Image 1 (cartoon, rainbow, N blue to C red):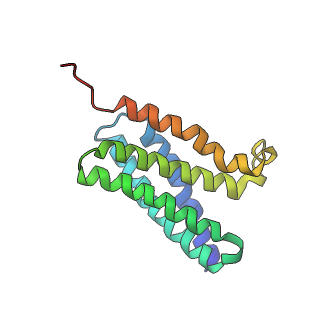
Image 2: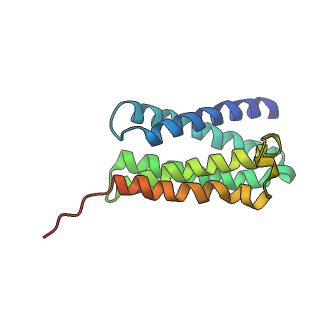
Image 3: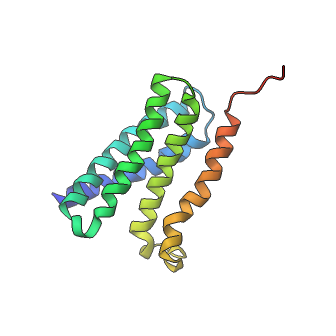
Length: 154
C-alpha cells in the first residue's frame, strides 16, 4: 500500500511542479493559466493526501512531511479559494497562496531528493530547506506587484 501511495505521490508531485510553473508564468487570464491552475490544485490535493498518509504510515522517518503537506496545501487551498470566492484582496491571496504552495512543493522535493541531485547534494541541509523560499519570496512580490491595482493620483 505504501508504494502505491508513493507512486501516486511522485506522479502528482511532478504534475504540480510542471503545471505550477506554467501557471505562474502565463498571463493571468482564462485559458492556459486557469486550466493549468486547476490541474495544479487538484494534483496538489493528491500530493497532500498521499503525503499525510505516508507520513502516518512511517511517522518515525517522515513526520516532517506531514507538517510540510498541511502548511503547503493550506497555502494552495487559500490561493485556490481566493480566486473562486473573489473577496477583497483576492488577487493578492491567490498569488501568494499559489506561489507559496509552489515554494512548499519545491522545498519538499529538494529535501527528500537532495542526495540524488548533483550540486544540491553538496549544499548544507539548512540551505536546501530555505533556498526555495529565498528565491521564491521575491518572485511572489514581483508577480504580485505586476498584478496589483494601479494607484490613481488624486
